[in-house]
Image (cartoon, rainbow, N blue to C red; front, side):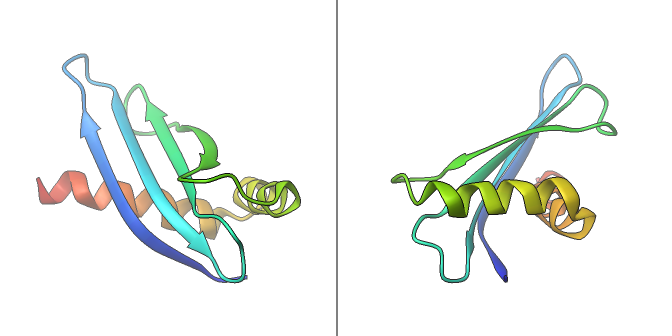
Length: 89
C-alpha cells in the first residue's frame, strides 16, 4: 500500500500550540484522506483521520487508520509533510 502526499500545512498558534493537516491518497483507494495534527508543544501529537472530499469505502478507511496507528513510518511521513511547511513559512 503506497501513500502519496497531495497537500500539507502547519501553523503555530499564538498560544504556542501547533495545528496542521496533510491531505493524501492511497494507491487503489476510492477517496482521498486528510489527517489533522495537534500538539501543545510540537512534541506529542494527537491526530484525527477523515475523508478529504467525498466519503469512500469504510473498510479502506479502517485499513488506513490502522496503518497510521501501527506504522511509525507512515505517521512520521504524514506529520513531516505538514511540519516541513512550517519551516518554509
